[in-house]
Length: 286
Image 1: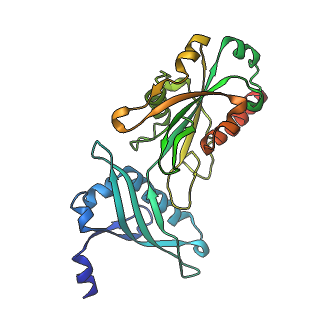
Image 2: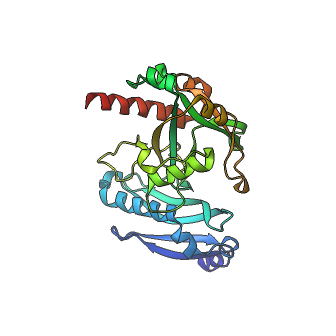
Image 3: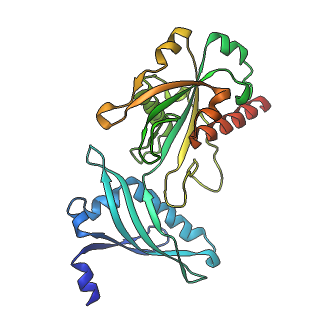
């Protein structure tokens, strides 16, 4: 009787994970499914990737730490202007098997992203920093974006250029180059980017989680050194950037790399500085 009552308000289907063969009920309010079908939700690239990672965990985790997800209830869906799903929020019914207790299962899916440390070196600063001094002594400029961030809320948030991966190809460097061009107008080839994100044997997916308590986002970091003239620096400072039709109201900011840590509260920037120093240290030892 209860099941029939619920079916009046919810559409549902059963998902079977490819390797572990675990079965999960996927349900969505009919009001949402009238706009976005269950099939479309199932094909949302971040959801496909999340299920694949869950499948791997099911196989690799020891029984005393095993967590079983038996149901996923979609709570909200946001779409981009293109009609594609942009963000998906759901609640997963997840039970720790050994303890027989539910674990927090609120998930905000947005997919992977890229962040870029763009270092602009003039002839004078470039000569001074030929040996790639530590970031706290580097007088070259870093290119930042300033834009409204309502979640903060901060109407002039200063941060590294960054953007979401809008597909499931995993082609990070090309996505990073596109984002740099969209946000700053600078044309940088993918092969000019330095990958700052170390690969680890424990995972096949590179990157770092900024808010793993509820969000799947994993950020892949890149750096790029670009030599520019003083005139080009002047043109970049205060330049408008971003895709205006998509609501990106961006102004470019330039700060000295040695001052970056105190010019922004963007965690991406601080992470990129650390990764840059680690990369340069590794290059010197090779």
